[in-house]
Image (spheres, rainbow, N blue to C red):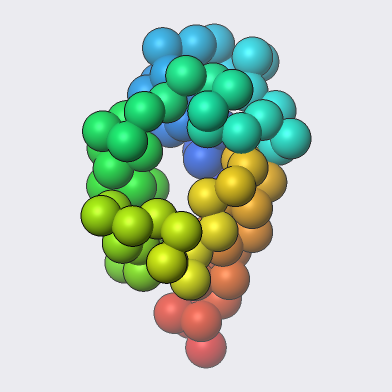
Length: 86
């Protein structure tokens, strides 16, 4: 399974939606994911990809990890995986 598909699957699960309802353009707010859902999504992503996401749950706007859309989350994860394998 590729990164994009897995991330969409994780986010859809947190939003209690079908994967087909989650698009790269979707924001977490549009999907109904609150702060707790966001933290749970980050934990699930870290576990699925064996990475550590630099995320400040207390102040997401201060984080280097962009959570503004599903596409930005996917891009961030791809970058973290590339850094890890480099």
